[in-house]
Image (cartoon, rainbow, N blue to C red; front, side, top):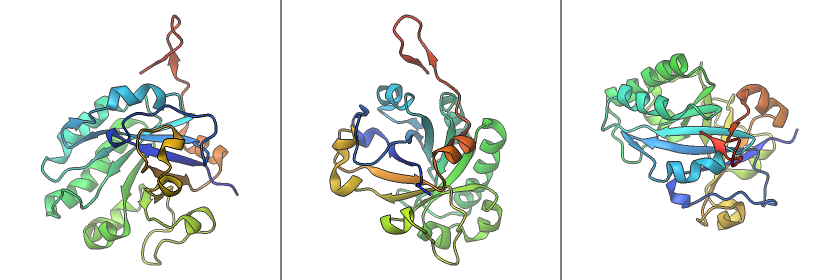
Length: 224
């Protein structure tokens, strides 16, 4: 099986102009749309080209400085043109309070109910083990996008750790984009996150169920 491959981007990439022959296929693009109570500063500059991708996802960086529900409502207000979403739970800029940990679960429940789209929780082994222990059992019913930087394992027959989930849906396997060649993928930065889907392109389409984008009859551009 050849796994579907893709990238995830945010303001840190500066811009995204798809290229014809990137170093690895770009079967999907996942864009950061928001963090805390802010929209990504380059959301609308980058979005038009993201929406041209065969499969397009969006993600929100969950902040411990704000209650979970206002963040979810902001995210829901932005995600309409995307095929799927992810709730990004990381240690950076966050504190592991009970409200943050249980808020992650409440957020997943709320977004799954309100979005009408496939969704995932994004996190890595250290957060899973050290912060999310009290809600691991509940989180297992949601798809997982794992951050775990092992290219060979991600693209062959990967196992995360035996005590972590093996049923991952997406795997972010590097932030170096084939050794800091992000610009070869059409972004403005050398660093770039690369990901794979746990299935081939047909399985990715079956999971994401993409809707064909609306095009402007005058200019032919994608309408968000």
